[in-house]
Amino acid sequence: MNLKKYLLFGGIALGMGLTSCVGDLDLDINDPNQGDPNSPDFTANTLGICYSGIAVSGISGSGSSYVAGLDPGTSAYLRLIFTLSEFCSDELTWIWPNDEGGSVGDLVACTWSANNSLCYGAYYRLLGHIAICNQFLANTADDASAEVQEMRAEARVLRAYSYYNMLDLFGQSSFITEEAAIGEKPKQISRAELFDWLEGELKEIVDMKLISETPVYGRVGLDGAEALLARLYLNAEVFSGKARWADCSTRCQNIINRHQGGGFMGSGLANEYLYLFCKENKQYMPGGSNKAENEILFGISYDSDMVQSYGGATLIVAATITNSHYVPRQNYGCSGEWSCIKGLQQMAERFYGLASDKRDDLWVKGFKPAGSNASGSWDDEDYTDTFLGFTGAWNTTGGNAIIKFTGNTITKNASSVVSGDALTLFDGQYVTDDNGERVWKPNYPATIFMSTDFPIIRLADIYLMYTECYLNGAGDAGNALTYINYVRQRANSPKYNSMAEVTKKELMDERSRELYLESVRRTDLIRNGMFTGPSQTVWQIKGNINNMDGTRIADRYALYPIPTAVLNSQPEFNQNPGY
Image 1: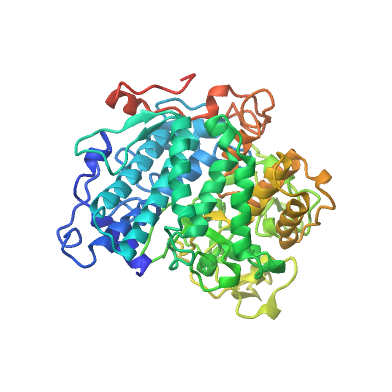
Image 2: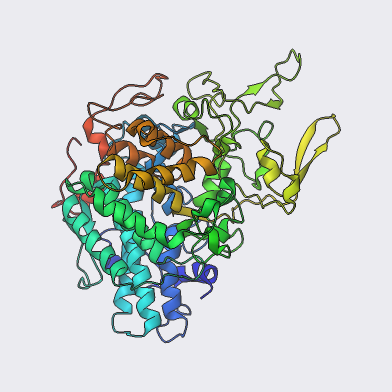
């Protein structure tokens, strides 16, 4: 199955019974050619929409959306997950707070309400994707062929991913499966009930090996399913009220065992960190060509021609390019320049004292005047470990350009790589321009949409999960130290000498250094009591959009509210506490 073909066409294959599974969300997906159940491509097409429901915003290209009332680009699945997971965290800010009628600013400041349009969009996007997966499962319920049974397992994992996000973001959740009767509305279940259901669903798929251990490129397999189960256990105390560190450790070790032997120091990690986020990262995906370094355990495929979205890597690349004069967008394979995302001071400080760490090598951490230019033009990029403070409330100046994802292609000449010069990792060369300045000239095109695949869970995260399990009483000390040091050494940072050096705070800093912009920071902060509550940390603009020191926030913000539109549609549903 050519997944990208079906990501393109799968979105027009389902037209029967979707609205009955979504409450008041209107999904109109019907095409007589692709939706014909007698077509030999029907099953593959309908599985395709289970993937495309995560990859793209709608069935008619990047300007369409399944969710009414939001800008189509804003409503893309992975963009909404990124928005609700990163904007409220201590990693970044979106510098246009009035976007979406002020809903963006409220997320950045952690002052949102039940009428926040982005909360609404995320809730309905998740429920809509669940409906799509349910429809596929209903349509294939009577097909016992091995191929379809494996497709069904994939759809169940993709549905579980959406239910996981409901669990994480909203707690109590709308819930419905493929067994619902036509016209039946979702019911609301508690966070603990959804946790139990997800655990049973994923354990059955993993332990009975209903899904391939060696999936086709771009499709989810055993690693992705078990990694999602490990992430569920990692957050079990928050989600269910009972810690499950030993279960998380066991699941992590299972995945690690399947990957040891290749890649960086035999860890299975990719040898080069920044290659995991470039145009050619498909080789590291499930089923990718670099079998020794298939670090991306669960990811979503993109293609600049066939699978276009203003979410995924396109969002992150275009938004972190903050000024084409200082940060030429062509250097990163991107023809768009959104100038939206800046790094916070707390994010920059995590790299202080780690000058050789590769993970921030693409950052532009401030600018310095060129020579004695009295006009104050800022030409030379400053890659030192500094933070340029915000010079005004929501001005475009200040902050760091925290570039990580790119549309770049990998260098064809390894000998051209210059230590400490991240751009030379990619295909191009430095030339002297007409002004006598040394500038980077890439050999790859700049495109509007990225072909960079989007990682949802990586093997590096699994290694760090195992280490966190050890800090909480599960697992082996020697393994925990080895595993976190794989991540550190791959980044070219000094390894830890003993687990005594790895405090909870240090591990959370290391997780941020490794996983920033990968939509996990909010969850990490909540799990460790750093987001709300008596031990919460404070960062720039937290609690007050105009306060560069930040303030504390109320406990209710550990969950997003059930949107008012949902409660109006189903008044029997309960709101989360405090809203």
